[in-house]
Length: 352
Image (tube, rainbow, N blue to C red; front, side):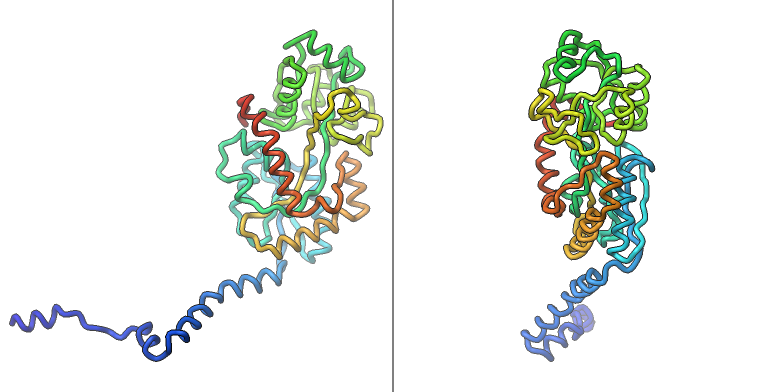
């Protein structure tokens, strides 16, 4: 009986398929087979990436239709379609200062079929003003810088200053009395205005608006607020009609679409550069050859005369060819983080 128990307790030694493989093949042959099996997903991935694109592509714009980001995305996408041979659809995903739409891009499959239109706010400033479920640097791959536009220093018609130096003098003589409209708490125009306060050594009151810059400009025209720092696409029509004053462009060169507005250096606040740039991004781990195809299509789109004319009419300036690479966009993002995050954190600005 005991012997029977001992026999039953002794595990039977089975010959598994793996063991038979080792028995039948030399070790070098087994390693070769294993390496080949491991390479199958990589080969499939490479073949799939080389065939890209085979279906429609989507660009997520994290703002409402009709804004400058949306208009830029639609114009560039229309021309990229010709290069890629597939439809490119625009999906507007709004909310939380662009973070909801940007999060959707971060969580998408890294297959080149979901891109995001990103800019100074979504890929720099939001990283310091919001508690994000993604990392603005580590969860994305840059594709191409599309266009840049500086801000304009603006005021209502009745402000008693005809140039920027006179405006600064007026603000210093009336600390805390002037009001400056901003397109939301934590918006790029607010952060630029915070730096402006610091540079000139005085303060004014911030008036936040929901819905971006359009309602700010409406109230500036109506005289309900005194000042604004806004992009040309939102404000240039009112400047041209002389409904509001424009004191300076926050760039080294004048706007081609408004050559009569002086640069910030010419206006007397040298070095106060603030540029609202826009670019295309894809999720992290998107294959490099897919990024290269998307970059090439974007570069071709930006060379198209129709696209250039349309963006120029919005006050957008297309960057030189050498600045349209993924590497250039990554370098710009890094430089902007180093510039703006300390300003945001010192002022304790939180997005809403």
